[in-house]
Length: 423
Image (cartoon, rainbow, N blue to C red):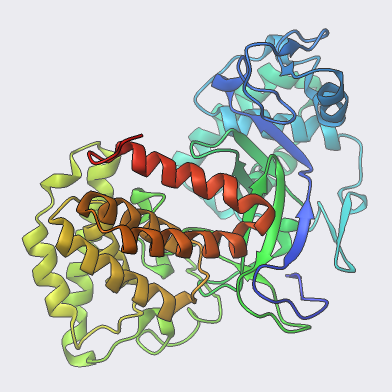
């Protein structure tokens, strides 16, 4: 598998790649309220005169979006929304856009390296042996026939590849709740690492890849495909790194080392480690299942979490990802005594910096929580300190040109929600 190598030295915050998607779709429930090009929300959007479904700010946005919309436009009036909307519409649009083309000829250049649509990874052929996947595949196939017409349907092997490419190479874009999905060619060729040196950010539907560590020339550029301590997705809190990539596990440089010797699996006392690791994973799994079933997270015993964190001392290293995730669960997803939470959040921030560096983007959730708690406690000095830290972090992660608007919005929301607020 060929991955992107740095063509020069990059410092933290430098832009490595800005790229437009090869294909993107808008979330079905947003079709009436969002511009399908620039994602602006407005009550004065104009419908496409042909399909009369997608909306745009005006002629400029409509022309810009036409390179993708022209494929779906004739078919949208007959589109029936369903449970598999994301897969069906994105795969359907790719079927229409790639029909009759040699996939090797669909390419994007990244820093002098050329990558093709044909080379996008996929790994779902073994899944065809699983009954649940066969059922899901037939459901998607039936919905696709209804959407693009049976005359446009590829053979089963090609369809499997397209579904696999979408699953492995598509990203959510937009706001906190996301506005849609997009598939990229060049950006999909950055390798995964559980200890990455770059991160991704979206400006509209464009993807931006920035260094958050120093990257030397000819060094592989990597980012993490999923949250490392799962602040944005409680359902992945329980996942150890080997589980995150299916049966084969993760094969990044850190995970390829023997368990207990790598940075994110650090074990200090191998004799006592196994039962503590099992108990930690069980508690994280419980939290994930409660979240999935919509049970109140406050049912989780904070006393038991405190006892488990105490057991981990001297056994698991502070950079062990399970130790980090357990503390993240306690002080980010559960409510407790504010002074105690503040101390725990500061500890969590120090562990995260040890594991991933001072510009790791998931630190933002910790800083936001610290701003919120210090606001409630009336500690103006600490509130301003963590506001500055959040701005400094975001300047590296998303670029100085984007940082003030986003960060100020978060801080303003925190201040407005405070009982001490005068806003």
